[in-house]
Amino acid sequence: KVLVKKERGKTDSSVRTYPLVSVIKAKLLALKAEQEENRKLCGRSYNTENLGYVFVDAVGNLMKPSYLTDAFRKFLEKNNLRHIRFHDLRHTTAALLMGSEVPIEQVQEWMGHSEISTTVNMYGHLEFSTKRVAASKISARIL
Image 1 (cartoon, rainbow, N blue to C red):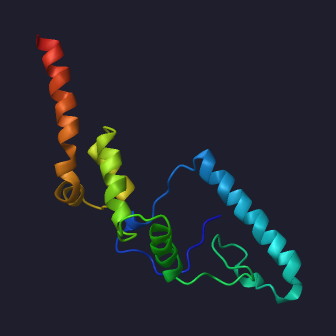
Image 2 (cartoon, rainbow, N blue to C red):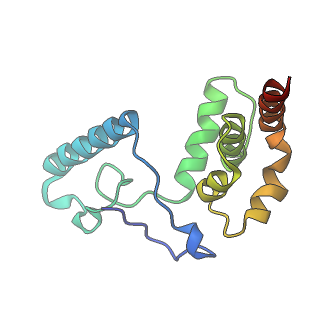
Image 3 (cartoon, helix red, strand yellow):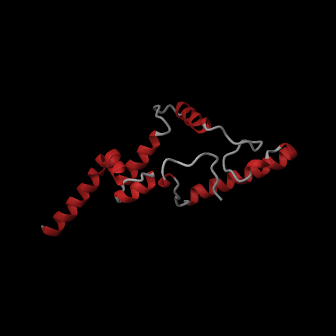
């Protein structure tokens, strides 16, 4: 069950589904167990209106939208890592996908772009490594 308490995105492609890898599934199940424990500990003072949501605080209230970006900034500082915006992780995701030779159409889908031209314009420069692989495959066939 997936619930998001906000308006829809700009386009239909803003709403998408990703595969749930085992490490994330385990973390989500542990989070759900922690929430159930908090619910028992808090009793009637636990906010039961948000039971279907993934990210709630210890008493069941929805987390503020700024929580993730603030926590990310603190994580970087604590670990002496260079400051980047949380949103910059989108570019990292695209770079990893492109570097892993994922077809541009799948990168488009992962990034939620309704038009492939958006993906090409924003991340096409990252496709050079796949061009090198293609050139190697072509040369292997003709040489």
